[in-house]
Length: 320
View 1 (cartoon, rainbow, N blue to C red):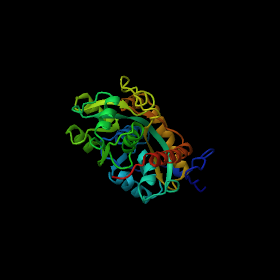
View 2: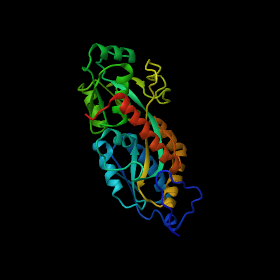
View 3: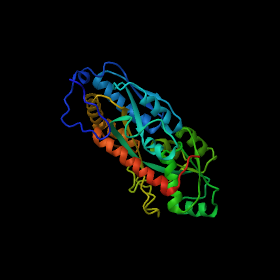
View 4: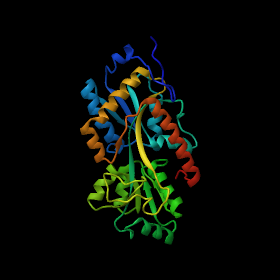
């Protein structure tokens, strides 16, 4: 029996596991990620990887290849064998890149096999403690008084934190200047050092400096408050009507991974995400677990790409 191939939008209903899935995995699984160790995606992968090891006795090896807003990692994954042993952590940035970069090394609708969405999460707006703004309203007033004088860091061009700042600029009618970094670590370091005034980042990356008083949180980017930071208002309730933005990350393979292997991966990952200890740790990261089926994740990626494209057009976001 020839395994059914899965591409974006092809149904998996009624798929029967073949010999390939029954023997899978017979060796460690490599998952490439375009961010440094310690990122939100890295933390999620290690949680899931531990559960896959417990279930299958095979390691999930996280291969960090940061740079070019995830394009380096994506290109490596696209060129890998479609056997289920090389996967890719697919963050929102990879859905953004085709609309922001003049050329990317992949076709979002053809070059990937969607497997599942791991989690979605809000971003947190944090500022340096010396910035004379303790509320969003005060930050907007300061930015209007000093156009172009306030810098905001991001984890890289085309990333959700980058576009979070551009959306803030648009809705608040201010002109904060984007400063891209290669990951959250160096961006947070420069924020703490006072080289940039603020940034939008994931809760897991922002929390250590928030707790230590090295940065001050002002709001979250989702329409509703975060369970991790219940006392922190959303940007919408802080006066920016229509502001609703979240980050997310999932797992894909190169195009052509056998559908039975895809289904086996998705089912085991979804099972892992539902386990109480994993759900608790994800909640501590400010993440909401998913585990959606492959076909649905494929539609989700395309819908998100279309949404981000509209945001880029409306904000005039550019690569810095």
